[in-house]
Amino acid sequence: MRTFALHTTESAPEAAKAPLSAIETAWGFIPNLHRTLAESPVTLQAYDTLFSLFGQSSFTAAEQQVVYLAINVFNACEYCTAGHSVLARNAGLPADAIEALRESQPLADPRHEALRRFAETVVRERGRVGEEDLAAFFEAGFSRAQVLEVVLAVATKTISNYTNHITHTPNDTFMAATAWTAPQRRAAGA
Image 1 (cartoon, rainbow, N blue to C red):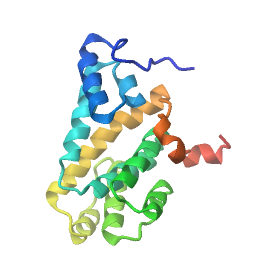
Image 2 (cartoon, rainbow, N blue to C red):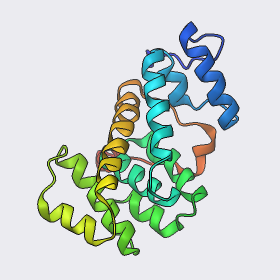
Image 3 (cartoon, rainbow, N blue to C red):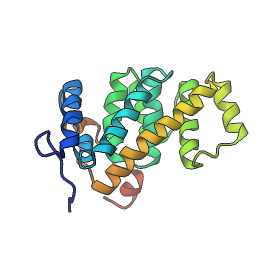
């Protein structure tokens, strides 16, 4: 049973109307995640701000999607995995890399694999990464600033992944070809 509204610019709380309108202008539509987040204008603003800031990080567009997909898959977020699969393709990530990320498999590109592993480790260990994890990340050519930028991505995806788990956000139409079922649900025959 869905208990959270998919707001429009007309139905959203007053403080969410302008942000939703800006999102619609930027994206050409309002994603269902944002329509759901509009119930809490401050949460919508926090997510949109963090998402925008991570987009300004020192990672390439493809690397950003490696980080996001690694986090989404680890957190078993079906909505975000489907959406970021499209964004990853648009960022130039090869189809085999996207599929490997969706299945928590190693990536052929050593730099991307180091990034995937580090992002997963940050989430799994709740930030308590070891010296070996940091060394591997640095050896792959990443910086101390990028360690913190991964933390920024984790914060961003925590908002969206947890929101989607709680509210059961339905996929948007652009995700039809990239729908994803979490391994836990596959095993349960969902």
